[in-house]
Amino acid sequence: MVTSTGGAAEAGTASGRLPRPWPLLVIGLGAAAAVWSGWVGLGQLTGFGVVQLLPGLWDELRINTAVVLPLSVEAYAGYALRCWLGATGLSPRTRRFARRSAITSLIIGTGTQAAYHLMIAAGIHTAPGPSPSWLPESRCWSWAWSRPWPDW
Image (cartoon, rainbow, N blue to C red):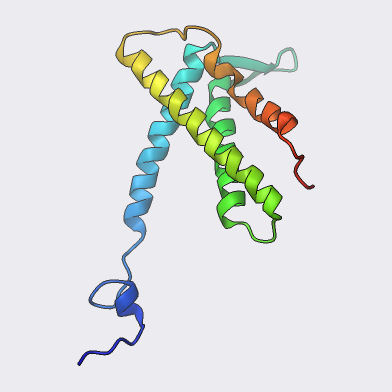
């Protein structure tokens, strides 16, 4: 008769060792590169580009504003996911708001990424309208129009 000890052998592999997490890092880096390039490419299709931040003061200081999309959209989604799934000490109302925000952000992000890749595959090199440029602003509007207001 074999009895269970409830040790690491049950939680991990037959040898008692837990699986190594490094493959997840490789997978995550690949996914991050794909998402980043998709958002930057979409930003470039819609007119985001290099701007001179301080003309007349520091003419050499330039930034490619296409990075605004991946930074704002993915950072928002990640923060909302963290509040929904991992943060402790938040009220149920705040968690509900975070859940709605995270799911909405992921749906919008997935749809927009798919649209970008379909446009590139079809040979479309300019976005047909302002579709992705409103994404960062939509986060602000979702805050403004959501009821009840989150606890601060």
